[in-house]
Structure formats: structure tokens, C-alpha cells
Length: 165
Image 1: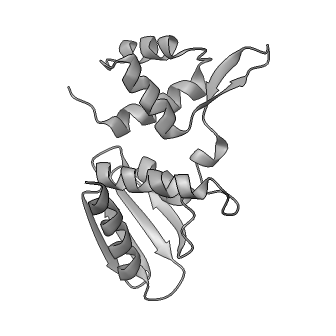
Image 2: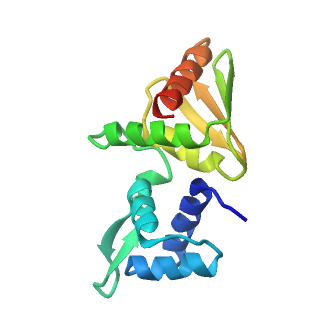
Image 3: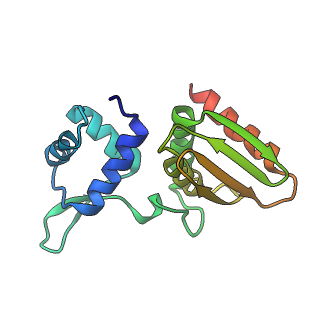
């Protein structure tokens, strides 16, 4: 069974939360045990894509961790927002299947299992007009700040996806 890059990256986030991963080789072994057939180069790109960094654990040994802002929106825009918007464009290009809008709502459709990953990317990008996101399995609901801005936000996200395809 072929699994998407998004599903693999979501699994990496889960593995990093559950295990002390000291090296890419250890992560490669964990992924292999889960049935993922990937190379070290792919693991390296995935770690970069999700923003994983090495930080010391309780014993001082370096382990991979995912920054807290990966799982949700930053409190305020920061220098990392430009990178987050670049990541959002890549994520949209990879997983956006369809988008629709009405009033101040935007519905984004993704492959199964990819909605949370896309919602996290939208949140991290700190788009001023987006009040928040709710993710299911294959659907993301965005709520916009103004009553009729849904179509404009949807068009912007579609354009971001198409630029990267």
C-alpha cells in the first residue's frame, strides 16, 4: 500500500512525540517497522518539512522534537511566518483536492488523513483574515474574520496551491 507524504509526515510527528529519536537512522527503523519504505534522504526532507530540530533530552542527549508552533498557530506573527507561508504553499500543492466557500467559511478537501496536517500549516502561516481552523479526516473548515471574505480566502489558497504545482 502506497502512503502519502502527508501521512508519513504525520506519522513522524507521532513517532517523535512517543519515542526518543536520537538519529535519522533510528527514525528510519521506526518508519520501516510501520511499513514505510523510505530512504534516509526522504526522512531528512520530512524532518525539515515538519520543522523538527534536535534538542537535549533530560539526560542531555540530542533528540528530534517538533516545535510547539507546528501543532497550532503562533501567538503572533514572527520571523518564521514567511517560512510557514512557504510551507503552506507546498502543503496546499500536495494535498488540496478542492476548495469551496460561503460567506465567512472556507471548506478545503484533502486526501484521507491529511486535513490536520493542512490545518496546522494554515494556522502556522498566521493569515490575518483566518480566524481559525477545524480539521476532520479529509476536510478543513476555515472561519474568516469578516462576513463575506470566504471566497477571497479560498481563491488565495487555490492560487497558492496552483503556483506550486
